[in-house]
Length: 297
Length: 337
Image (cartoon, rainbow over all chains, first blue to last red; front, side):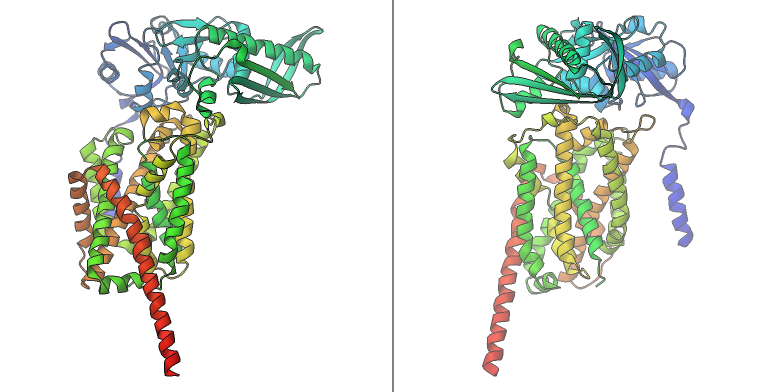
């Protein structure tokens, strides 16, 4: 009986599945792309492999099965770093990819035409560029879970990075597939108005010339009183500068961001959360109901 | 009868409670947090008469009122059935999509048959080990969700107080087992039960808090706050935490079911003092049958209905009886003098 007990762990090890599947039987994707022009087209790019050809089908499960039959390996999208979408597909299939197929919630969502993007892609460089832009305060932090949260909000829009020459830009993607590009000024304003971390150096064009400033920490306080939205941004910097100049600059960037966002019928700065916190009806606020204040310390 | 340490009682109760919490089917809003706090306080008060009883009070009650034993037994069978229906509803679509519904359920039930045949004491002894794994998974969950927390999503006057309170009572099936376990405790039963009630409420509040602040609107779309959180909470870039969550999910269910079947076995032993090895596995199979034949909503309602009677009304009556007997004895001794 004692020997029999040693046999049980061996049987349990066989149940792990390690005995039936090797690493070469799996296809670990680094980037995937989706378009919905009639049928669903699925692009799956494995790590360090040649550019891929799309497969088509009517559902996510079908295109993944198709991909598996083409590549001869089980498709695993759990480590995917980039999801590429265009206006035809929008974010509708992304929810199924996240909850049913195990796509990482931290995966970056890029707004681009997969047919163009997957021709000669360098995903590592693109992901690196997006992350570096986010870390250096040039781009708002976006990922799959934040995009989906915005997408299911009352105005149904999501803020996504877009491929541009130099640094990536930002677009507001709508439910109907239309997208609105944000100006550079609005992109900077979006950075202050959304969840962000600080810990970067930014170059400021002061009247006395360019000056590098280390941003240690950023904190945003949002509140809603008498149907007026108050956004108070606190920013801690290490250099001694004329704070008034930076405060005015940030305030004007935030105002531009809100103006462009409201013009595009979008909410990517948590307006719905503020309305829901006070049990107020969900409706698009007017531009004059926003009060932005900035304190530089 | 073999005794169980108070820390083992705490561990087995909190693990069973955690199973119910991770199977919360839908969030109701920020008011659910306050509903949970209120329900926990009510449960703490309800436990007072139960914990004031003398040692072996439950055993003595079972031997004098056998019909009550049958009611307790039915209650634990219903709790076990409720647990199985939760597994049947939640697991396949959330954590075990690859294995198929039936395969996963059969393998888990086979494991439960083995653990329940080993007895309640064996389950109590391994509970602290499972507890450590459970704590690691909670830590991973918090680490993964930490960066996504947005406090502005919390509304202090949110909806969901009453549904949250009702849901928390429905999740407290294992509270009935606390009395029977305390009967077998060496010492420290009060601290074990109150620590369990507190820890379970904290865990439930943590899950609700994280699901509201980190999950946002995705939680209400997908249901099952805990499972949605596990999809969102992946703290390591190079390694997914799914395996850990699946392991903990299965282990918590095994502990929950082993507790219910073990308690049913204990009650059978108290009613009919013959030790039968297959009582617990047989009760487990009965739970599975009940789960398939009774609607989950009806199971929940029956548990909510029976719980206050079994953990509060009966212990209270027993305590009053004990007290009056004590007063009578005192009077008799005075008269004898």
